[in-house]
Length: 329
Ligand code: ADP
Image 1 (cartoon, rainbow, N blue to C red):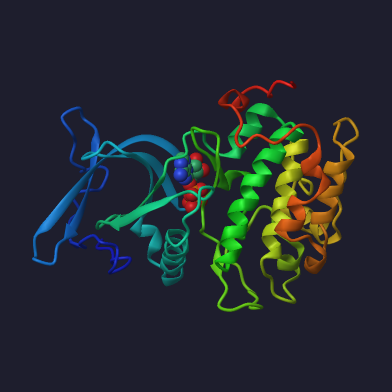
Image 2: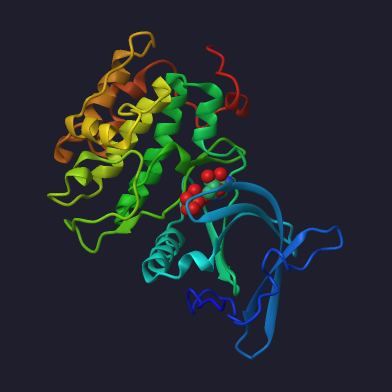
């Protein structure tokens, strides 16, 4: 079946018809690796071919499969998100992907996954991103169970710096969760996956709809009465901080409906058996407020006493903390 081009401005020629680049019939390198070819048409009519080697599988999301993509000419390795065009037959799905690309490529920040490039062939859309070798905070927490306050301080400072940048550019992420917080080989946090993000048109603009089911959803989105804005990201940040300290999300239950009820009533508690400072509890409580207007701003969060517990906060943590807690001294 012939698939439509996603966009005319993807820098790649849409050739139509039979694909040479689908996985079954893909060209192979001499070592038997799968080669993906990007065809760029030049103004003089010539076609420039850029080759990538599709390497290790990195993970699977709702729509995308992610692999290491090595650009043959300079050996730079990216995270390549591969989205089958067969999943993009509905206009809405195409618009969502285009919006993700448009928003993500406009953001350049140390703590946001770098957007390198995107292109398409007949079968797939490919998004090349900065490779985050140390996976996401989901895997980190699975290995570590929960983190020390010093680590949570360190990661939160980095997340806030990205969020300040994003909000200054009128972008709301709307799906902040551990699985969308990536770590590179230097253990720097990188916010990724802009699939549910939105850009406000003007100051004071509010969004009413959201497609998809964010994990750490804010109560005002569930109520759906007043519209929502930047404060939904602040709420999710509170849920993330709690989850990193305690080891599981505050409103987690066996089924989504009960979780949503608990969110709408702001019903959560700190388990007694886990030692958490009063500063941490006070920070989480100040963020997880049903009324979005009562939640602190990003600068107010940074000024909270939570960030003054213990010694100075390191810029980043050693990679040994991927598996073991940091030493206490
Ligand atoms: P979807 O948009 O379909 O949900 P994701 O963006 O969540 O897809 O990506 C799917 C998986 O690919 C992730 O869970 C993660 O394991 C991996 N992945 C995504 N982006 C990167 C990246 N920049 N570096 C390394 N791995 C990544």
